[in-house]
Every structure is written in structure tokens, then in C-alpha cells.
Amino acid sequence: MVAAKGLILKDGARVAIIGGGPAGSFFSIFASRLAQDLGKSLDVTIYERKTFDKQGAAGCNMCAGVISESLVQSLALEGINLPSSVVQSGIDSYYFHTLNGSIQIKSSRLQQRGIATIFRGGGPLGSHKNAIQSFDEFLLQKSVEDGVTVKHIMVDDINLEGDKPMLYSGGKILQDCDLLVGAFGIKANTAKNFEKLGIGYKIPSTIKATQSEIELGSDWITKRFGHSIHIFLLRIPGVKFVSVIPKGNFITISLLAKEPNINYIKDFLGHPVMKKMLPPGFKAPEKFCHCFPRINISAAKKPFANRLVFIGDASSARLYKDGIGSAYITSKAAVHTALLQGVGEEDFKKHYLPVCKTLNRDNIFGQFLFFLNDLISCVSPLSKSHFKMIQWEQNCLQKDSHYSDILWDMFTGSRFYKDVFLRTLNPWPIIHHWVQLLHLP
Image (cartoon, rainbow, N blue to C red):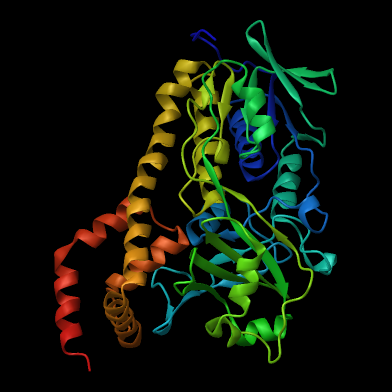
């Protein structure tokens, strides 16, 4: 496809979005609102095979389901306030569990319970559906309120005819597009349809995580897990880390290991540190809701072309964290480029690509930080010293909780990895803390 100049979205332009997850919904909402502000009308259609009101994998965009405090605030400024039917739990702290003990970490920046936990579908199998509204379904409803059309149709083929993309389903033409937005995440089959177009696009590399939903009852979860996300750094062979996220009657266990395997979940539930968190006599059920979601660990190659742009996980996402936040960032940047600059390849290269590159470069710092965290967790003397210092910070309620804030920002995704990395290089807090450590009993 040859780069073209002067491609703009005229009044009445047809915009098609493949994928009805957060990236697709964010794009549709922001595009509709910005077009209205500019005095334009757009014909925006989201194509999404799933409806997100079904229980289990059939209605779920498999995800740990945590929305950072910074994104909760950004959505509120956009007029997207999460209702109680969507928010399963408000989070005010993180617990870190190690072989040396457990520490609760709070951030002075967090406004009350500013982190939200959500389900991406209608809830786990066997849950009470009336108490759960899918986050993805909620966003799609917001899109419809802004005049967007949602069609539950699978787009199974894409061609470039003339200078416009053409969409097909079952051999039948769906529509042509003045702009086609790829918001399909990391679905391999859909990605192949774009890769075969010869525009230079290539899907990001991924790994699989292991995730499950375990029902414990809201009373027990409130008693033992509270309003905290629990991170377990237990040196389990083959396991990088485990997070346990409270969600109403359920906990979501997200486990990152060398390979996906449901037995890791069963082994974790039987670990002495986790057993203390479970009801007396608890036994893992024979069947429970679980999945092996793919996680984006690299950037897509050339996530744009004439009248084509890729957003969210189909483009760039933050390493291990805040995929919904990445969807927000990339979708907004793509909307501003398309409506204020143009929809040509050069427009996206100049105005959209820098945003993707910022996320991609930031992940390099994230890789180093997680490597450093793994090293500290594996070396017993380092782990004990680190644990002791963070415990002192939390007990003394230090205004400048250097180590605590670094750990908080790494695992919540509330700050860019580069900012966290630069804070680790600041020598003065480190010297001060180690002087204090020498005087600890």
C-alpha cells in the first residue's frame, strides 16, 4: 500500500472498528464526541462477535480485571463513571507475601479505594448474574449512547479495494471503510487477515498466563483479603509471581509462569502461605472457571497504514500491567490523529506512532525492574533486607516511602516504568534508608 497524503475523515465518513473490548469502545466514544465538537457526523460501527453478558469464557475478554487509580480518575474526567454493578471491589492497598512474611503497602497518593476490580464478562460460571455487570458490556452501552452501532458479527475477511478497506463475513460484504480500526487484541486469526494485506503489520509477541476464579463467599473474602490485591512472591519453581484479586464472592488468581498450566493454580492453593488465607478444610473444587489468556510482551510492527490503525493490545501495551490503560492511551491518540490530522499513513506515523514508541520504550525499563524484583526475591539476604526496610517504612508511616512506592508503582501500573526506574537510581533515599536499616534490630 502506497502512502497517500490528504486523506481525511469527511462529514458522514464510515468508521469500522473490529473488536468491542475497551480499546474499541474507547475509540468509538472519543471519536463520536470529538466529531461532534468539530461539527462533523461519523458513521461508527463496532463489530464484536461476543456479547459480554454470558458467564464463563463465552462472554469474557479474559483478563485479571484491575483498573488503576489513574485510569479510574481519567475515565471520570471523560464522564465515564463506573457503577457499583461493574466495580466488584474497591482497592486501597496491596499485600506482598514472601517467605519472610507479609507486608501491607498503601500509597499516600491513593484517594480512598481508588483502584477498581472488575469482570470482563458476565462473571465466572455459577455466579449470580444479577450482581455482576461486565466492564466491557458497560463500555459498549456507553458507545451506543454516543450514537455508535454495535453489530455482533464476526469479520472473517478483509481486503483493500481501491483506496478503502472492505469487510466481509461469510463471503458477504459488510461495508467499506473510510477508516478501519483494529481493536481485536491479540486474536491470531484476525491478525492474520491484516498481515496478509501486505501493509507491513505484524501482531505483537505474546505469552500465556494462567488465571482462575475461585468462589469463597463475600464474607470470607472481606475478612481475609479485605480491600487489597495480594501479590505472592514465594519462589515457587517455574512461577514468576501470583496475584489474588478480590471480586465480590470470588477471588481471581492470576499466575505468570514459564508455561500455562492449571496445576500451578492447584499447587498455589495448597501452598502453606496461601492456605492461611483460605477457609478451614478448604479443598480446590474439581471444576472451576479458568482460562489461559495471552499477554502482549512486545510491540506490533507498523500499526498503521492508509485508512488503517491498530490500537490496544493489537498495537502496544504495557508489560504485564494496565492493559486497559494502554487501550485508553492508544485509542485516544489514534482518535486525535484521525480527526485532527488525517487518516493517511504519514499522519499516523507522525502523530500516532510516537505514542506507541513511548509505551514500547517504557517496557524496556519494566523488564529491568521485574528482573531486579526476581533477583531480590530469589536471593535470601537481599529479600530479607528489602522486606525489613519496606516493613519499617509502613510501620513508621514515612512520607517518603521510597521502596514501598517503587513496589506499589511497579505492580499497580499507576506510573510509567521509566519514572519508577529513575527513582531507583536516586542515591540519597537509598543511603538514608540503609543508614536506618543498620539501626534496626
